[in-house]
Length: 223
Figure 1 (cartoon, helix red, strand yellow):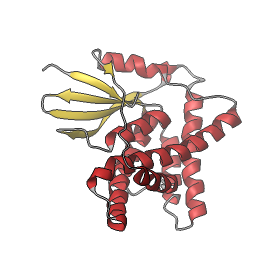
Figure 2: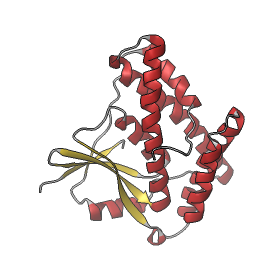
Figure 3: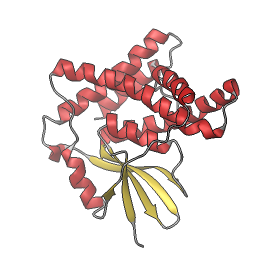
Figure 4: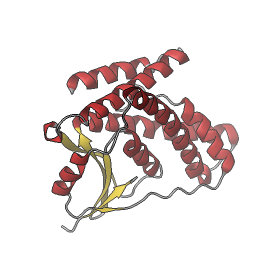
């Protein structure tokens, strides 16, 4: 697992290249490697997997961008994302095998900063206001999701297999959070222009290294 993590992180370093073609290839290759890891995991006993749970956010409320980011993590990193309510604090946790959780957390931190930075720039360039944030974030989500889907489908086609949800996560999650209940994210899109601008930016977005990086009710996000 450590070797896989190191290889992915090296590829993410290349994704910072000023050469757009090199950066795009490196980012796609990192996604490819993660997809291969998940396909390989399907061929072995899940008892051999090391499942962990990491908290990626802890605040009084869930941030506007988190519903989009949680869906990206669930769609592409073979993890589950949970909203854990404890008193006045809301935690967002990721559950899955060690490689997926560490790379998902890494990606979450990077994308969260990028979503905010890109929207600030969009407001500066266009005169948009904070009421357009959700629409722009939805576009970012759609654009980034498309490029991730393309990279994943390429590997699945080569393998002749499709990545399926890790059954071991459900067992681990039941042990950790026996009272978990599911919920779905809803996306409020009000400004088509902001969505389209966000989508273009999302397609060009490359994940790279160097990011900063009582009664309990627990709710799944993005599923």
